[in-house]
Image (cartoon, rainbow, N blue to C red):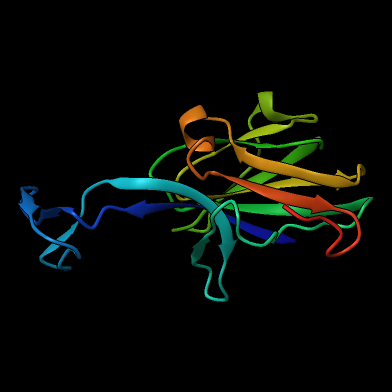
Length: 168
């Protein structure tokens, strides 16, 4: 089981108060009186021991490193406000299920999601589980298939093979 995350970094310059009125000001926002209004970046990442998303940048060390021929279930936790089409290069996977992060309720894949896929829609507030066998060794990427997201840090390298065998 590998736990990965979809994360948004919020603006600390544009905030909103309880009346939904923009509060001009300087960083940081002043919770609970005001909270960030808009994301400035979306990033992939991992989870900490408490289940919170840890956003990672492209150049940070590789965190997804399955062995060749290993079968893994990736739990993709979406902490953003948007659905993201997540693509994992050079591997076909099967969608196992989705789980609502708030209620814990699970749902099966939709009828059109059966069979092998290389892209899955990860819905906000849900954990999407996919099962893949990583049979081709090498350095690859996984990313959001929304072009403006993949061009702005929502892409990470992953390495299939011996631990530490790839460099980004």
